Image 1 (cartoon, rainbow, N blue to C red):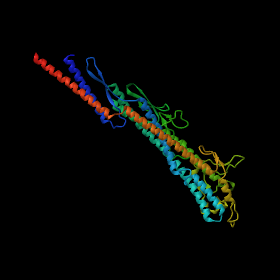
Image 2 (cartoon, one colour):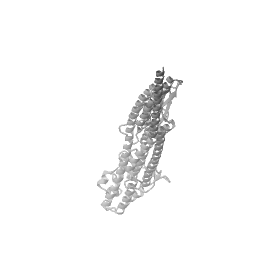
Image 3 (spheres, rainbow, N blue to C red):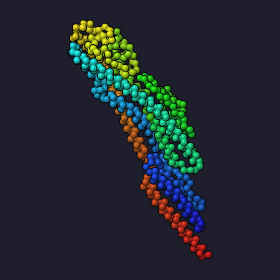
Amino acid sequence: MTLSSAINTATSSLQASQTQTALVSRNIANANVAGATRKYANVVTGADGRLEIRSVSQSGNTALFRNVLNGTSDVARSGVVAGGLDRLNEVIGDTDAKGSPAAKVSALADALVSYSKAPANGEVGRAAVAAAQALATSLNVASDTVDQIRQDADDELGQAASDMRSILSQIQDLNQRITAGTVANRDVTDEVDQRDQQIQKLSEYVGINVQSRGDNDVVIYTDSGVTLFDRVARSVDFTATPSLKPGQAGGAFRIDGTVVTGANSFMPVTSGKIAGLIELRDKVAPQFQTQLDAIANNLIDVFSETGGAQGLFQDASATVTGVAATGTTPASASSSLAGAAGRIKVAASVLGDPTLLRDGGISGGAKYNTDTAATGYTTRLTNLVTSIRTARAYSADGADATGTIANFAGSSMSWLQGTRSTTLATNQYQQTLLDKTQTTLSNETGIDLNTELTRLLDLQRSFQASSKIITTVDQMMAALLQAI
């Protein structure tokens, strides 16, 4: 090796060490930055022995990153549904809770029994009416909560669409910088980290599949195959419904012009916050609403009076004719109007005169007890106790198909508790799995300070060795010049 080639090799080594030291310093500075990956230089030796930095790369694990995206989407979906069920649980409580509709139905039945034993006692009569009022109120509150949960989910879908458009815009900007920088052989590793972070944010809203192609370009699809990003961000649209009514369907969510939610969607998304909000708005909450409405409609039928007149419980929208029991088929409510639980109320006339519950004629029709002096009349009360404790038929998914109103209400509360428990368990499992996957990915691709500091010491020794070579060559050149 000639002296000139030795000094050229040492000089190139110094330059390579300088570049690598800058990368190590950058890694150390980003050690606590979420999503930052370890950067390293690709060093090659040229034909003349010179060291060259061909490119800067970053640590990565495609399989683990894909698992993190999938886990993020799964946690987001189950978390949304669990949150809605928690809100219902706060209002309804357990099956045995005194404030639940099931407990209120049983309390009303007990109050009617007490009234039938003391029909002349006004205080007992008022207690029975108060029990009915408490039951109607509990159904109203539960129904209002369901309505609010659906409305909030619909509003959140609108906000989610806006958030997704913003994230996709940032991905588009970063992707353009990355592909241009890659073509120009510029270090784009920091931009790739930022793009990955935005992609992970996007996965919170919808399950995604990320495909890489030349020049560090990416294409993003939903988990159902709809294009979200391909060089440019695709459209994300949703129009919120200002006031969702019971039984009213909410609007559809569209990506790139394709409907990705609802029964009519050919490419529905299956994970992410969007899927969770749709499940909560269009499936879970309406199913519980149907159960509450079944309780309300059957109460209206059970307490109806002669000729189909509404009795103790009333709903101005309902028509009461009743479906009588035939053979082995239990009686059932004639009305199945959505939202009955939110509209049901105790007749105002009974609130003013509890004896109407005993005697009939609540809505102004014929009375069962035509003798106003017969304050010991119990036939109507006895019949009401029998009716409320007789099995009936219901058409509400999730709860029992037959049983007393109290039993049906209990099965409805059990469905709510069971669904909530299952959803929470699923969410906790998915969160644990996601946490472990993120930890593994961080260990694989993240920055370890001990490793970087050790690398910094190695580079320092390399720098010193190269400097020593240059000093030695300089001394040899000086000695040679003096000898000439």
